Amino acid sequence: MEPTHNGSGSVTACDVLAFGSVRAAAAELAGLRTRPGPAPAQPLPSGFLKHADDQTVVAIAAVFQAVAAGGLASLRFTEWGVLAAPRFFGRVTLAQALQRFAAEGAWGVTPHLIPHRSLHSISGTISQALRIHGPNFGVGGGPGGPLEVLRAAWAMLHGDKLPGVWVVMTGWDPEPIPDGSGLLPGDAQCVGLALALTMGRPGWRGARLHLVPAEQTCGAAGSLVSLSTPDLLNLESLFTALTAADVRSAAVVWQLPDGGRLELERAEPSKGLAGPHAWLANGRVGVGSSGTGAENPL
Image 1 (cartoon, rainbow, N blue to C red):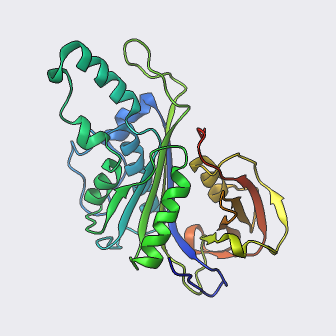
Image 2 (cartoon, rainbow, N blue to C red; image 1 turned 90 degrees about the horizontal axis):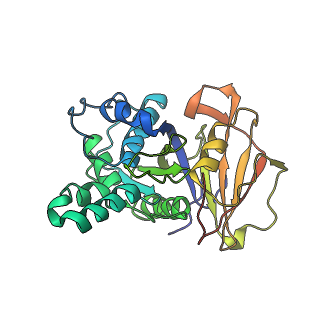
């Protein structure tokens, strides 16, 4: 991945055109499955998400929310890429399928299991919904997915020169354990976060992500203000950094395991237009450090 310089002086930067977030309890997923939101192009077929995993449902809903919130409905995503980082994707369904397989054999397992519960299922479904012909694939699958998927997005934008990439992160909070009848606990919520990213450009007035290599992390400028201190970079901390109303004009910083850092320059809500067109301003917010190899609760 070649370094990319822009008007902000960033080494490698991606502009956040828009983002959307969905948090749904198990009981709410049925309604979201049939009505995930207004489709950017033609309406989705009524059974489009009938066999989809719950994490796919919230992913589609988050993407549609991002399109609506960012005013991207008229934008053609044909050549874009799609990257999805689910956490423990299809875990509950697979556990139930293995029990049925042990009791009934192959006839007890639905043929929809593989196409709708594989790592690449979310990205493939999004590409169909948005009529995208660019590359799409799943990344990670575990607690380290957010960092892995963002690094993959950088490579596709700065290396492959795609016009844009949809980055979607999903997971359960907390990780659900079904009861004997297969019902999920009432406190479990399925969470999805969708980011529409493009290569960093001079003059961009919205939120911006920077991936700073280890050799360029010394001597960071600006003051650090604590927003929160999660142990790992995860979709919840990223969502908090994007939407925190009590922190104005800030850049959220996650320290990475290799010594580098991920920065999110947050828009100044009192300047410019609302949403992704607000003015950028200086400042920094320390959010914590990122790590790998341990489960990452939302």
